[in-house]
Image 1: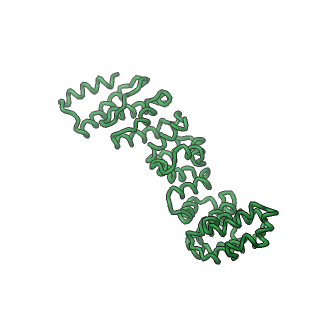
Image 2: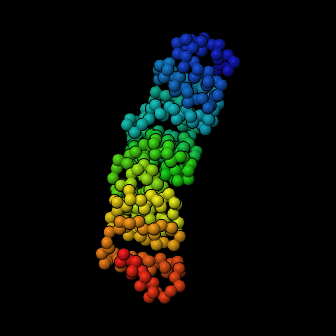
Image 3: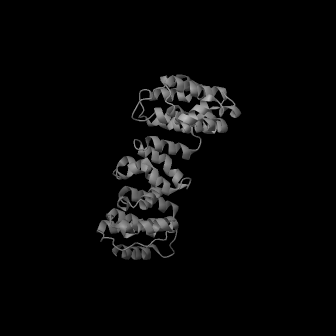
Length: 321
């Protein structure tokens, strides 16, 4: 490999400056920033229209001569896979066999992953394993999966991304605008069992994201019930969430069960919410259920000082309203 001080004076660099200035800049950056700029090798190969064998030689030359660790070389692998791997086409590694062999030797987990991708690129398990090999941080792994298979595995991807959104590792506004998985969710029926049973634990952040996406028509049914259960366990509600779930733009889509869940939530000690107007009249069985729920809350919290008969009287009057 040429030395940094001499690369800009080589015939190759001078020729590229005339014919393909962008390629010359990429080549110079490689020697200035080493591993950080390795990902530019793929762009360099494309700009100079290299044959597969030449491309393979280019990559392996840098990997071997620079004596890079796997971690240092990962940016190059990410760019290589970006060009050669997708859910819509099988992975072909023969054209860059030497490069793939180098990476396999550095990280044996890749052998099984690449072998599987040669016949099946629509396997979530191996995409998830690949993300863990390529990145250390959970938020980076989740971003990689969203960018590559967010449309295909939107539920699985949201399971990895929503925790990073909830912890504010990634701004919600960026997620809502750029996430392929989120856009896929918005086009699906949110009442589908696969979403409710697998994303129910993320009901709080999911509700907030739907509100900010102005998809208030989806804030009902099973998702709203998961949401209420989560808040009842926490015994507190964020002001922004409280305003959202009691707003007419949300409650106008409620059925009787949704209203009952909201009523339970408003009665939970620690939850500072008032039931908004608009609740439909309750049938006798629903009134009885309200009474049972409040009795349960009272007993669990030991919040009462009056005799139970007095509480039952007050509860019944509330349920009748």
